[in-house]
Image 1 (cartoon, rainbow, N blue to C red):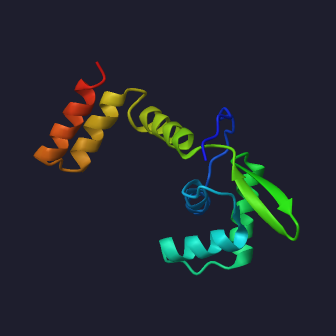
Image 2: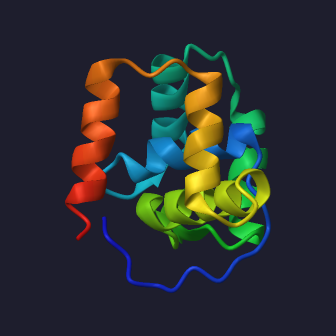
Length: 132
């Protein structure tokens, strides 16, 4: 479900809200709360109840990430922000916060904390070369 809405919300998602959003982003159709609960519990090995998920959904709606529409006796949830938009903003925040605004600093810091295999280094080089 690709959206072209500009990403204007500034409020952060909690880790739990991100899990809920990931389930919604992975779906090709709108979802009811029952579908969301079923998938999140199965995919992320949770035992969340309707009230828990309802709280996360209402917070995501208030923060501008989701839209909720009533259909009969159920509510359906639509993403207003794509996973790609969210991911890009999170990466930009990492660069700013942990790389002093420079991608190279972030990559160097990452490489120091996680030993990169020759394969991973090669893949990164190919990605960078492909940017020319």
